[in-house]
Image 1 (cartoon, chains in turn purple, green):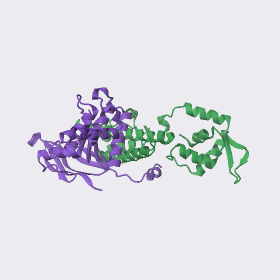
Image 2 (cartoon, each protein chain N blue to C red):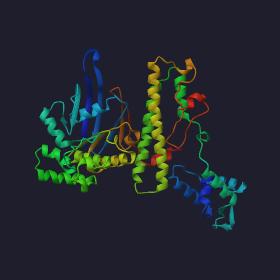
Image 3 (cartoon, rainbow over the protein chains, first blue to last red):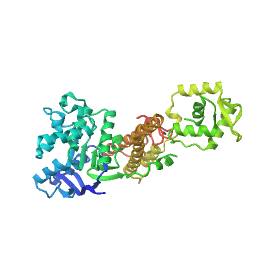
Length: 240
Length: 212
């Protein structure tokens, strides 16, 4: 198996001196291709900071963030942006779709920004929408879709093209629990079937349980980890 | 829940042999509650003594094992069971709530560490249950229902642990002492929901604490 995300000794401090806030302290985390890792912890424990650093949206104070072997902390700003467009997908709680664009245009956008021609980008977008089972909504605008459908569009946008790393920040936060489960099913399938590495930030244990591994942050420090799982049969023996 | 009522339920439609009952019981509960054949026969003997089942008119399977059928009294008992909600008090005592209460009461125990270890352990069970659920996507609805029950219980336990942890932090921030020193009223409430469908409040903690 290959390691897609490798975070080493990651530290992120906001402010200086007495006012310094330590969002993350020496966090190590690696995620293999095909693996889904959930990050849990109370509010303010550093979950989202970990995700933004992993995706190159925030610059760590110290440590390394390797995505597919490229250290985001040493790359130029442009190189990080290019890597983000090509290799990293994000899913947010509030979807972050552009209201003036249709589903297909939203999904195609990162590819077009990266220089893919419109027609080719549209093809990739349609394929991604098909994978999340809403290809029939390609020409609809976000406001004409349900929350669950919008999140599917956002996931399609996060997986379009050749993404290796999928980062999801409370992707089920705005959804009812049934719709939330289908979103997790989708994320899970992406990892299982396409060898994408996934990191899921959630405060919901039920959703975190879809992951191969669950790590727990408190005050910016990794304090616990569960998994990988044993064989399924073992559970049935253990219950008594 | 009792094996007794489970067997009565399985006998409701037609008479069955003990080994059949065992197989069907396990299938219906997704093998989360393995029975041995001895338990089945002991229970049948007791049910027969109480007039709730009887051997079906002299039939055997040739190996001397007899077929059992439900009686009218048995049907009435089964109906009563289905009509009566399960009370939390009727379930076994909750070891986790007691453990945390004691961890608070006894000096020198790192309660946060106890909470964290339990959280990761329960999380792991929850992951395993979720994996079983995924494996049963188009499958057996009884099994799905039992799994969901365990998933909800594990989830509730994790939420309860989160709650205990923040309660403890607030308590310490306010300069609070542990119940060993101050006496009652501050230990986390019981209400464990384990990964086996167990749990609830106990008689071992004062009334006030049992309120969530």
